[in-house]
Image (tube, rainbow, N blue to C red; front, side):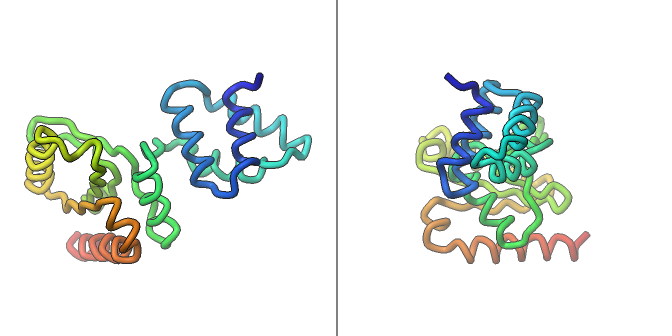
Length: 177
């Protein structure tokens, strides 16, 4: 039986994309099943032996080191889409306090006050969530945030449009600053 750090290394060898490996890493860190010292120790131990998957393992550790990983496939995919397009890396689950309330924005560029909210069918389409989303968005806008909302359908059918819109939002905010 292998521990969580070694399991992530094994996943890095078994899959052919970083996104799946990042998902495993993010979930194990979120659930506190593995620590950063355990991950780095695993890398050092197995890199020395030339084990398969080590290059991907190193890549995903470096990518996530010191950052909060995106929660879920949707957020992780949009995060990767934006960074692969050459945009600055957005902050996942960025905390924002506005209107006496605390929120976490799915992806954010805090310096430009650009928030990206991703609406999946499971968590945003109940009556309660629908109402709360409107209150939250209004508070963010009143605090000076530009809120961009995307659905899974837009991601699948118009990924380039999403990149172009985020790029334009960042460009317009940098000119305004």
